[in-house]
Image 1 (spheres, rainbow, N blue to C red):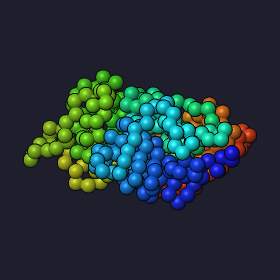
Image 2: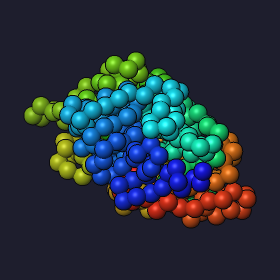
Image 3: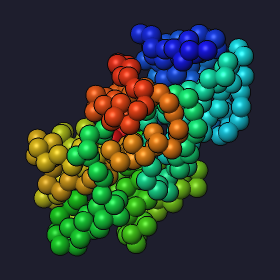
Image 4: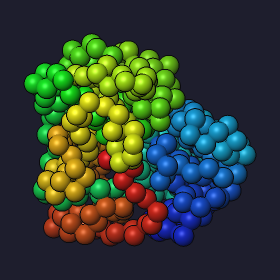
Amino acid sequence: MRARDLLHPRPEGLYCPPGDFFIDPVRPVDRALITHGHSDHARAGHRSVLATRQTLDIMALRYGDGFAATTQAALPGERLDLGGVSVTFRPAGHVLGSAQIAVEHGGMRIVASGDYKRRADATCAPFEPIACDVFITEATFALPVFRHPDDRGEIAVLLRSAGQFPERAHLVGAYALGKAQRVMSLLRQAGYDRPIYIHGALQKLSAYYQLQGIDLGALLPATLEPGGKRDFAGAIVVGPPSAFADRWARRFPDPVSCFASGWMRIRQRAKQRGVELPLIISDHSDWDELTQTIRETGASEVWVTHGREEALVRWCELKGISARPLHLVGYEDEGD
């Protein structure tokens, strides 16, 4: 069987004709397999959704219980049969519940990785390399300039700044699913035992993480009583990046603006956002991790999607690996 007969792009997303399903479709479809809960991959309105239990729970938290007509939870490593096509979900290391999806039929195995990272992360299961014929990889940070530093060093920078400016609040911009909880977890691992204040947009997801046994410590709502600015002096406050552009951020005492993202490697991006303290913490693989992963899969063909596709395609070609960009549309960098 040819790879493109097993999976190929359509306007709705990646489609498997033999199994009659889509992976991370961007439009409502009859049967959707979802890699993780970020909104560019997990959308409401499908008739049937197959995903990990945690991803289904996260979708319900974000969209409501009726986000799909029917749902089915896939256990990690469980082999499922969809119209004669074998489908297996395995951890992707991106956020809680994230999975790669291995699709097998007619002697061909294709692995759709979704988004993934290779760094250790206490808030989700680690990435598992899967041997395959074709590997579909993201390319968010697929340029050699992107080599992420140690997360612990970035958190040490944050804590050092909080110690140097005890009269100021440190506002950390972090995406609501995955990045925010990872920052909180890293703070706890570094020994920070004070309450962490969080924006309301993080409350449901952070509570779910804690129900899943992930230690985030004491979390308090970042709300102010009249005249209570001084209560946040020296505090660390975590919120979605969008909140930092509105009145919410102006309630804190002389805040230090921080942003946790792989894009903070680019100084101009930090400057454009008005970020005083950039924190290079990413939930995506960097250049070295992307190329390492491709090698580990042993794939003879690589399909590259949503990101810096050309550079990674060229690297594969130089290594004797057939590669092509998929040019899928509708995927953003919500979890960077």
